[in-house]
Amino acid sequence: MATRPNAEGVYLLYHRGVQITPTYTANKQIDSDTGKIRADRAYYYRAIREARCTITDPYPSLITGELTITASQPIFDETEEIKYVACIDIPLDEVIKISHFSKSDKFFANLFKYSYGAFAIALIAVAMLLFFKGAQSFFIYEITPSKFEIKNVFEATILITLALAIFDLAKTLIEEEILGRHKERNIYGPHKTMVRFLGSIIIALSIEALMLVFKFAITDPDKLLYAMYIVAGVTALLIGLATYIKFTSTKMRE
Image (cartoon, rainbow, N blue to C red; front, side, top):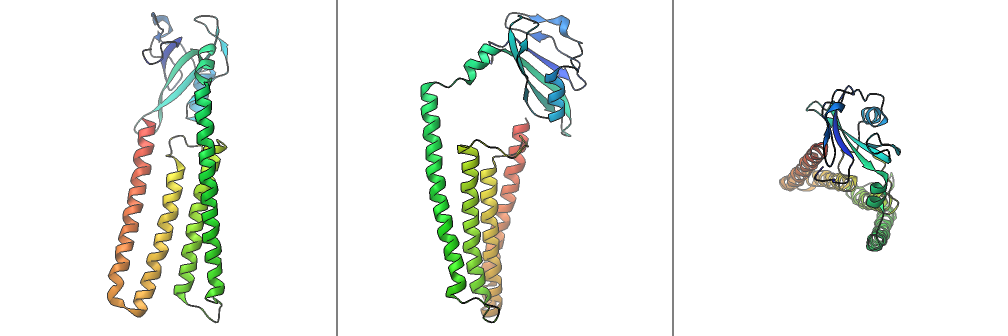
């Protein structure tokens, strides 16, 4: 209750719906609630069914008789199975106070939204320039089935891939930061902007390394070692990204 002194009650449920702790309020604890079955309550079965934090609709509190909401968070064990459900009852008027934006909050929210919008538009413009430059390469180098050079094809592919990576980043910024849409349902996943952007960069570097392998294998085999350096760098980025996803997911579960 120290972190949320205005809450009506805090308690813990076993994964089968039985309350295993007293209900802790600001002034006392209700020991008689221990052992009660809450399996038919929305805050229990929704948390179990959706395996994520849920919030109920307002309902009359059994403690105060006033409208309240209950937030419930499933707690997972080391095998990622739900072991407990932590619940907190908060009066509806407190929820309204928490969710109400002040004038400064609205100002900075709009400032950040418009700033993200400006950056997204600039990124889209850069992506379009890279795309047109990559598409233009097919005409400059006259890439046709009868006149086909791997080097020219890879250069155009790299430009188009980078354009796709930057455009995907701009799209993600617009969806998440401006429109507020979060398509990924997994609440334990890390922020997808970093993952998707780094993934696109890794793909672009992999294509570059492949291009150098073909180039040096044909023109100068002694320089194949430099292409291997890029491959090693891509491998390190891939391992780093996997580590980031792993530890971020674990930390958010905790």
